[in-house]
Length: 76
Image 1 (spheres, one colour):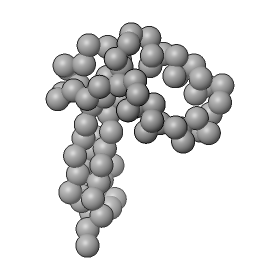
Image 2: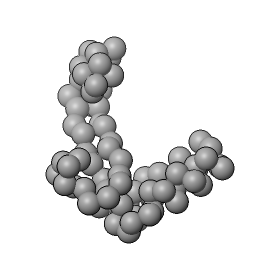
Image 3: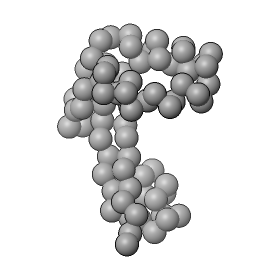
Image 4: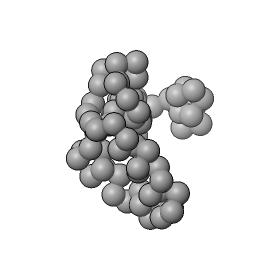
Protein backbone atom coordinates (compact mmCIF):
# COMPACT_ATOMS: atom_id res chain seq x y z
CA UNK A 1 0.00 0.00 0.00
CA UNK A 2 2.81 2.43 0.83
CA UNK A 3 4.37 1.94 -2.58
CA UNK A 4 1.03 2.65 -4.28
CA UNK A 5 0.66 5.89 -2.32
CA UNK A 6 4.19 7.06 -3.10
CA UNK A 7 4.39 5.98 -6.75
CA UNK A 8 2.56 9.14 -7.82
CA UNK A 9 5.42 11.26 -6.46
CA UNK A 10 8.30 9.08 -7.61
CA UNK A 11 8.89 6.79 -4.60
CA UNK A 12 10.88 9.27 -2.49
CA UNK A 13 12.95 8.28 0.52
CA UNK A 14 10.43 7.40 3.23
CA UNK A 15 9.90 5.76 6.60
CA UNK A 16 6.90 4.52 8.52
CA UNK A 17 6.53 4.66 12.30
CA UNK A 18 3.94 3.12 14.61
CA UNK A 19 2.35 4.86 17.60
CA UNK A 20 0.12 3.04 20.07
CA UNK A 21 -2.06 4.47 22.80
CA UNK A 22 -0.48 4.63 26.26
CA UNK A 23 -3.85 4.31 28.00
CA UNK A 24 -6.48 1.87 26.71
CA UNK A 25 -9.45 3.69 25.22
CA UNK A 26 -7.60 6.87 24.26
CA UNK A 27 -7.83 6.17 20.53
CA UNK A 28 -11.59 5.48 20.78
CA UNK A 29 -12.11 8.75 22.68
CA UNK A 30 -10.14 10.65 20.03
CA UNK A 31 -12.14 9.02 17.24
CA UNK A 32 -15.41 10.08 18.90
CA UNK A 33 -14.15 13.67 19.26
CA UNK A 34 -13.04 13.63 15.62
CA UNK A 35 -16.52 12.52 14.50
CA UNK A 36 -18.00 15.55 16.27
CA UNK A 37 -15.33 18.18 15.52
CA UNK A 38 -14.09 17.01 12.12
CA UNK A 39 -10.87 18.10 10.47
CA UNK A 40 -10.33 21.06 12.80
CA UNK A 41 -9.34 18.57 15.50
CA UNK A 42 -6.45 17.24 13.40
CA UNK A 43 -4.50 20.48 13.87
CA UNK A 44 -3.61 19.18 17.33
CA UNK A 45 -2.63 15.67 16.14
CA UNK A 46 1.14 16.10 16.67
CA UNK A 47 0.54 17.15 20.28
CA UNK A 48 -2.03 14.37 20.74
CA UNK A 49 0.50 11.78 19.59
CA UNK A 50 3.32 13.20 21.73
CA UNK A 51 1.16 13.30 24.87
CA UNK A 52 -0.84 10.09 24.60
CA UNK A 53 0.98 7.62 22.36
CA UNK A 54 4.26 5.71 22.47
CA UNK A 55 6.34 4.60 19.49
CA UNK A 56 6.64 0.87 18.78
CA UNK A 57 9.04 -0.89 16.40
CA UNK A 58 6.23 -2.69 14.52
CA UNK A 59 2.44 -2.62 14.22
CA UNK A 60 2.26 -6.10 15.77
CA UNK A 61 4.10 -5.00 18.93
CA UNK A 62 1.54 -2.35 19.89
CA UNK A 63 -0.50 -3.51 22.89
CA UNK A 64 -3.69 -1.66 21.89
CA UNK A 65 -4.95 0.58 19.15
CA UNK A 66 -2.79 3.07 17.37
CA UNK A 67 -1.82 4.85 14.22
CA UNK A 68 1.00 4.81 11.72
CA UNK A 69 2.83 7.83 10.42
CA UNK A 70 4.50 8.05 7.03
CA UNK A 71 7.30 10.52 6.37
CA UNK A 72 8.36 11.16 2.78
CA UNK A 73 11.46 13.23 2.02
CA UNK A 74 11.15 15.58 -0.94
CA UNK A 75 13.96 14.93 -3.42
CA UNK A 76 16.35 17.84 -3.94
